[in-house]
Each structure stands twice: as C-alpha cells, then as structure tokens.
Length: 592
Image (cartoon, rainbow, N blue to C red; front, side, top):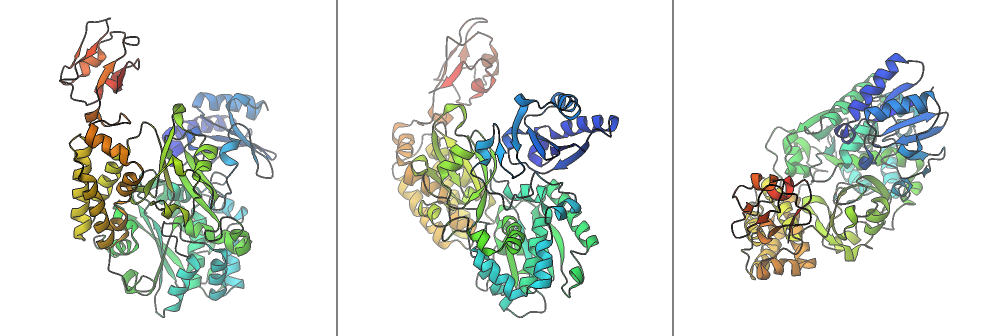
C-alpha cells in the first residue's frame, strides 16, 4: 500500500505539519484503502518544512513546503492519480539511498550514521526500529561479547565524545569499568542548551531507541544496571517519545531483568532538567539528578570513580550513544573508515543563522566549514557575503570566512580559538556585528553562570558591561586590553567548562575582528550597521509612499511628513530603536 509520511518533529510542527497531518488524516478516514498515513521525525531539511514523503513500491518522493491545500492535491494527483507533482518535489530517494532532485546538494556530502533512522521510521514504533536493524547490536553485545570486547570495539572505532570535549569514548568506558562498586550508573546528557543547537532533540524525537540501545550496551560494558536520561523540560516531544520507547522496550524485554535471556539487568529513568545551561556540565548535571542545585564539583575525583551519588558513573551525550549500535553491528573498521586520523566517524551539525538551507547535516569528520556552509547549506541568504560561523555555542568562538577551508575536527577547530562543541553552527553574513555577537553570547553565559566561582560570576559581568558600552559607542581604547586580561583570568580560574570557555566568543572576535571593535570605539560607528546606537536612520524617497505608518509608530516623534508625501527622519532626536525599519511595508527605511 502507498504510504504518506509526515515529518512530525518540533521543527515540522512549528512550520505547520500538524495541519498537514490533520488534512491527510481526514482524507485517509474517507479513503482508508487508498493509502497508509504515518509519522516520522526530522527529515533534516528543516528549511523545506512541512515535508511529506510518498512511498510506493520502492519509489520515495519527498514534497517540501507542504500546505493543507497541497496535501489535498498530493492525495488527488499522486496517491490516487499516480502523477508526481514535480514542481513541489524537494527530492527523491533511490533504492540505494541516493538522493536526487532539487535538494541533492544538501544530502550529497552527508553520511548518515547517527541520523540513519531519523526521517525514515516512525519514532513511536518499536517494530519499525527493529525492522531497520534495531536491537541487533544489543543482542550481539549481550550474547556474543563480554564487557572487555565491547569496550575494545568502541576504542578501535575511534569514537570520541560528541558533547564537545571529544574524549575517547572507549577509554572513558574502561575507566568506569575498572572501578569496583556495588552500583554503577550510565547517564545520558540530553541537556542541549546552546542557542542554535537542535541535534540531540532531533535524534530523541526521531530515533529514541538508538539512544536507549547505546546506553544499554554501555551499561553492559561498565557493569551498570541503571541509567538516567537528563533531558531539559523544554523538549516535551522528545520526552514523550522517550517515555513511549522506554515502555515499549520494557514490554519487549530490552529493558528490565535478564535482558534477551541473559543474566544482564538494566533499566532507565528520565530526569527532566529545568533549563539551566550549567547542567550541561556533567558534575552539575549529577547534582541536579540528586535533587540539589546544579553546581559543578571539584575534580578529582572524576565521575568514573565517584560520579552520581558518589558511585562510578559514565556520562555521554545523545549523539555518542546513538553511534554505538551502528559500531557494534558494522564493526570498528567500518566506522573508522570515515573522518580523519584522530577524529573518526561522522558528526551531526545544526546549521542555523544566515545560511540558505538550515537544518541537520551529518558529515564525515574533516569536512571543511566551506563545504558545510556552501555545499550542504546552499550558501548565504539574500546573496550576502559569508562573514563567520559561531561554533560550539556560547562556549565556542567565531571563525572568520577566511578560515573557511578549516576541517571540522577535534584538532583543527580548537586551533582557531573556537571549540567543536556539540554541533551547533550559526552562520553569519556581512550584516552581522561581531561585537554585538560577542555581547549576545556573553550575556547568555553570564546569565547562566551558577555563581559558584568568583571569576565566572563577576568576571563575565565586567566583560559584559564593557561590551555593552562599546556597542553603545561609549567604549575606550584600553577596553580591549581589559577584555583580554579578564578573559584569560576567567578561563584559568573557573571551576567548570562554562566559565573556562565563556570568554571564547569575545577572545575570537577580538582576534579576528579587532578593526570592527576599533570602529565602534574610535569612530563611534558599527561597520555592519547593526548596533542601533551607532547608526543613523534614513528614508529612501524613491520607496517612501507617505503611508505615515513609520511616523505613527515613532516613540519620540522623530519622523516628519504629510500623508502621501515623502517622510524625513530627524536623527538628532531619533532614539535609534529601529521601530521604523520593522513597521515599514515598503522597505523604504534604511540605516547607515
């Protein structure tokens, strides 16, 4: 039977997928024999949401930008009539998995290991996960391998932690396995808090069983019988689908006592986080699970020795665990064939910002920034110039377009002053002010600081005050030296990764865009025309229709003009709020 599959992840639903699904559901109820209606997770092409795939005898056609009206047309002409609506096709998928069509370039450089099932199976169906090879790795690990063999296979694969630090996963597991204890814990860090990052959420929404399977295998490897998934409460769909997956896995015997007839026991519980960014740091995360305020602990002892409730604990993020079943089934050599010598395998990135094709991309390690931005991402919106990428979230750094040929791996990215992070990649164009970007991210980390360390608590506040002054045109030349000195002390003296990396956006932007800082400080101008306090607003007489909307919305009455005649802005009294730009329907107001 023909299948119509709707992408029902958070990105799809926010774009209108629920209305599309409801329309197809209505059509299905009236024509139950004509097609089967299914759901799936993120299909990766978030820029084309809502997405609907039609499958028929091996043919797979994915439609983009689907509306309820288009869904009606797809039903009538394609599902019933057999005619593909070529003008609405985003891409087609051949039987061998090759993508063809308009969005071929987006998928071309990708290799889907973590995302192997996302956008393909129903995430709420254990049967579909099993049909795609799910829990085969678990059966092999429990019935054919001992813990040492599992750890060695992961070591040989070269898998490194995908949460940002890049520590070798197999080595980390061996540490926890080496400590003797009556209780050990497996923890999955799903506290994805970076602005612009949505990799872990998409995996949990699209393929929750792969994460569970990886955690169970890790439990066997280190000798743990219980695990926690720490997921922020702002991910309600991910939590709901995780709960469904856990219940189904228990019922089928993949969780609980004597799994698959073995002597191994393992179960999982979800702990919902309250959205504290610092709880992405593993010891703060442990504190939160234990019911305390999320604040980092002094190390050593390290979690492998004394982690959750002072018991040996292994903590990895969502993406790391999702790699494990593929490695166990396909072998370490197959995994290590991708990537670079020291950074093996693939990495999932969330492309966001000024890039044309925003969405999820999984590429081999070593793929360059330019390839991600221009091949996968399709380049910059509105024909603007590529300026920089922010990698690693608020704890990362800004990498300029001049370094676009930098390979994305655990060695090359830190050399630029940024970090790999969990995979967020925010693309910026020529209209982006790098001083304001640094201020924005520092404001985030300063607000999220738990306050335990003086340098993090107070130092980031002092840096934020300086950056705010600079964006308001009140900076002084010596401010740059103050920022560099404060950044060094904060990095050296902070207890956890939040403070140790918080200055990165500031330090990298000063390193690569010092002239932009000096323009703000000396010339009192924002070269990107972004900082409202440092620009003047004008009305283009060729575009102004005299509609009076800008004048009516100006809070300080700085705009003069009669109806149906060109208006003028008095910059001497203008408050620089930018309201005139946002309300103008004719693109007549500009800033310079």
